[in-house]
Amino acid sequence: MRFFVTGISGFAGTHLAALLLDRGHEVFGAARETTPALEALHRGYGERFVASQVELCDVRNRERLRAALGRALPDGVFHLAALGFVPRSFAEADLTYEVNFLGTIEVLAAVRDIAPRARVVCVTTGEIYGLIDVSRDLPLAETQPLRPLTPYAVAKAAADLAAFQFHRTHGIEVIRARPFNHTGPGQSPLFVCSEFARAIAAAELGVAEPRLRVGNLDVERDFSDVRDVVNGYLALYERGEAGEAYNLGSGVATSVRWILDELLRQGRVAIEVEVDRRKMRPSEMPRIVGSIAKIGERTGWRPQIPLRQTLADMLEHWRANLGREPT
Image (cartoon, rainbow, N blue to C red; front, side, top):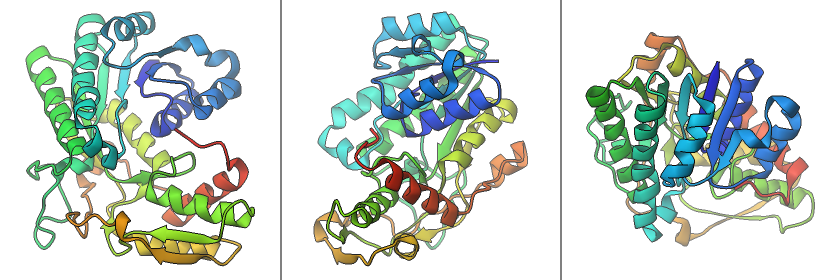
């Protein structure tokens, strides 16, 4: 089969492209820029995945996006392109709304006009649930009201609703994927698990002081491995019900403190940990965990990779690749 992936050069995008190529599919895509991970895919898969199969364009660029989709004429589309760093969304709210919401509209409209028979997996986020009552609402099911708390989450909630509208109004087979926190090798050190792993690897290699500044370690989140999550995206393409939304996650709440302790246990040098109040987020929910019952019942998908293994793989990635920062 033939697939088109937006955001193909990003963290989850490159993992998804590798999964699809390993399954014998043809892969095309759009990316704002090339990255070391995308270049590694081109090298690793040779003639099966060449640079001409990826259009370097912003998803808001209607002409180039449609030209790329027209060349691919895919059986399926995975829409992953987004600005994904929550703190940046406060500083650049307008850009976040444009890329994450209006960019989604451009992708859906292009599918409607150029590849209307393609099934679409539109990736939003568990962040769209936003304000919750942790004593009553957990685990979060897909029926939970959307009360997003950040510009990033607002834009993604709008994209989620737009995907539903395009299904109902235009008959496109759109499935909405709502992943919770996912991590793994290749993730940007802007995100907490990768930040910790990079700092430990840097201290081991003697290129940074053995010191780590942290924020609130007691928050609990639903962490899972990116490789499990992209398997979930493919399962939704194959067996998800069009028009429906599905959570993806571990179904377990894990504290940031546990993640840090586990990475320190796996590390090879002693690390001094300092609390940095500037890293605190005063309004964040203390505990978030999603229900993954719906996707399991519909597709049979469940996460397979233990979090300890995910962290070990990420630490090894940084030991081998320190200095080549992912984007």
